[in-house]
Image (cartoon, rainbow, N blue to C red; front, side, top):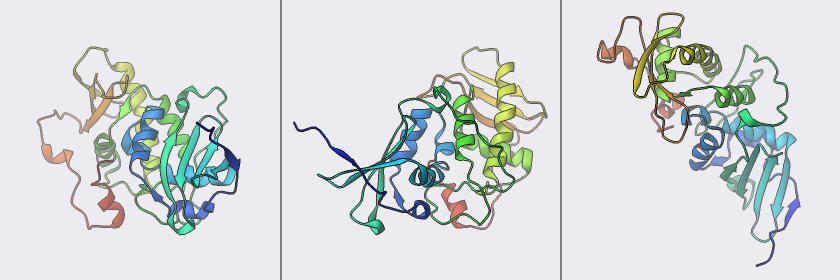
Length: 255
């Protein structure tokens, strides 16, 4: 069998096209598994990550089949087939280690006030002047001692910020606030198997499951209002109905 030959080449799409290029759904699962983070978090990191790697990573091409590979050291690697710029499709993602285990992590800048982290299926350019802090979110999620399930993130947003849907401009704010409380909640956990209900520093009650499929971390599966229990006031565990928009429609997806 002949050895695969990769040749340095220009990326088949521009950095701006990272906001519109087709992305296969398996990428979310591959990214989440590689970095031990949850699907709902992985889903908003793909497009900004791809844009940055097109600008600063190494692009290579296989001349035998037209496959491209875009990589940044050992941490991130995208692969896709391109029959032309208009038909590029991202097929695979790989990382040799989780972001939390990076042997030489670069210092990260402070997250600016204006951010934009859209679901990967919602193509479109971010508003001018907004940042996409995917590195900060990825490293934080990878280093957390717990896994944050997507419904829990939305419950937290509802009870802490009183918003029923997390817009792309609010996701970073909600995530970092939740990550801060998640560390404190984990410190209070007794480590016993099964489910636990643990209050955070503001009185919200976090539902923790000691078992999480695909991860050694315990999982945060829900966030309840003060003095609530899992069977109490179930309406508070549902986001209020709001007018449909393309981004809100994406919230009904499995990740």
